[in-house]
Image 1: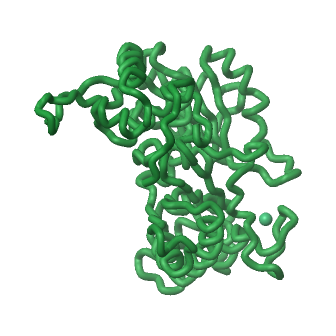
Image 2 (image 1 turned 180 degrees about the vertical axis):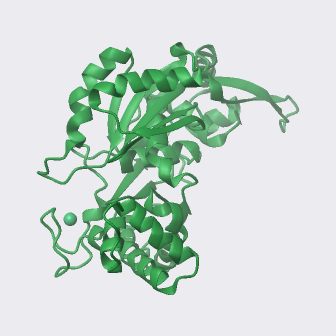
Length: 381
Ligand SMILES: [Zn+2]
C-alpha cells in the first residue's frame, strides 16, 4: 500500500481521519497519525472534536509495545442516520443506515408521486422512531436516463429544493450505480487507498468509482456509463447512438430479449429475468448458458474498465446480481485473471454485494452519512 505524503492539517483532514477510522474499524491515535501522515497534536484535536460531535467513541485499549495501553477509537454506529430512497419504475425502496453503513430500517412501497415524497419521508422515519435531530438528510437515486430521452428520472432534481424545504433537511440526488459504489465502499470498510469500482446490473448496466475516499462523478455527474462501453465495432445498435454497447448483450433486458422466451403481458423485465436466473441456478442448462454468455460479454468490458482505471477491487451489485451474481462473478474473475493488465502487480478482487437489490438505496443513505460526517472529500485530498 502506498504511503501518502504528510499533508498539512486542513479542511480535508477531518474527512481523512473519519475515513481511516471507518476502514480500520478500531484504531489508536498513534496508528491514526501513522496512517494519515498528520502530526500527533493535529490528530488529538480532530479526535477530540469528533468525540464531542458524537461521531466516534473510545472502545477500550490495546496493548502497546512500549507498555502504556493505547485507547482505541471507532465510529459510533447508532448516533446519526442517513435516509436513502431508490425510485424504481413501480416501487420506492426506503432505507435508513447508521454511521457505519449498517441498515437500521427498510421499507418498500408503491412508487408515490413527487408530491408525496415528503409525506413518505415523514412516515418512514416516524415508523422507525429515529430522533429527528439525528437524521442528517435524504438522498434519492434513480437510473441514469439515455441522452435526449424524455425520462421522468429528472423529476427528483427539479423537486429537490422543494423537498428539502418541506422536510427541513438536505436532499441529494444521485444515480443508482454511483450511490451503490459509495454504499459498498462505506459498509465494506474499503480503504481510501484502494481504487474501488462497482458494477451495477439493472435494467441497464452502470458503474461507480470511489477514488481517494470520494465518489468520482466526471464533468457532469455522468461518469461510469459502463453499459455503453462498446465491445463490438459492428455490434448491435444502441439507443445511445453507438454500436456494440455491452448493455445490449449483458443487461437484464438483453438476457430476457436473447432468451427467445415469451412471457405473459404482466411480466416485467425484472420478473422475467429472475425466472431465467432462478432456472439457471437450479440446473437448467439453457438458462445457465444464456447467463454465462451475458457474463462473458460483461467480462470483456470489465477488463477494459479495470485496465483504464487500474482498479484493485470490483463489487458486483444491483437486482441483476441478486440471483445470478455468482455466474457473473465467476466469469469476471476468470477473465480478469487472464487479461487484467495489472495482474502481475496486484490481484483484482471481484466480490458480490451482500444486498444487491437494496444496494442503490443503501448507497444513497451512505452518501448522506458521508456528507455529514466526512465532508470535504475530493480525490487525493
Ligand atoms: Zn449504448
